[in-house]
Image 1 (cartoon, rainbow, N blue to C red):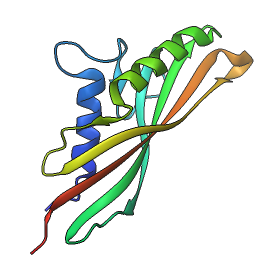
Image 2: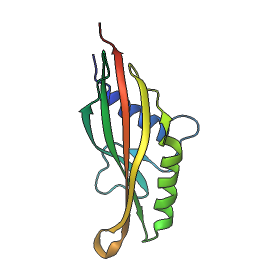
Image 3: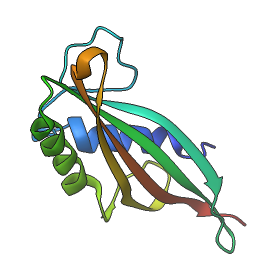
Length: 136
């Protein structure tokens, strides 16, 4: 039985990039090669801590999303971050084999990155508490 972490990443990807109307209008990648053309969103690192409730095992999972744009303008990065917030903040996600997958954007950060500040790097911190089936 899965702890749901991989299924959660797939659910976040599906919200941001999948279906007929993706939430962000730029590519969403799990592991972007260094030469990937900008703009794009990268699903970054994740951390989990137990969040067991009564007879149900659960996880509190924090996922870091990276937003990459170029040209030194923060506007495009802020627009993408806004799209991510609208799609995920205070939403219940459909995570296979899990329930109660409630998402919260806990922080965002935006800064210049690279030689001569050629890139704008946005960081979005997403926290999701999700629970497995009741244990007997």
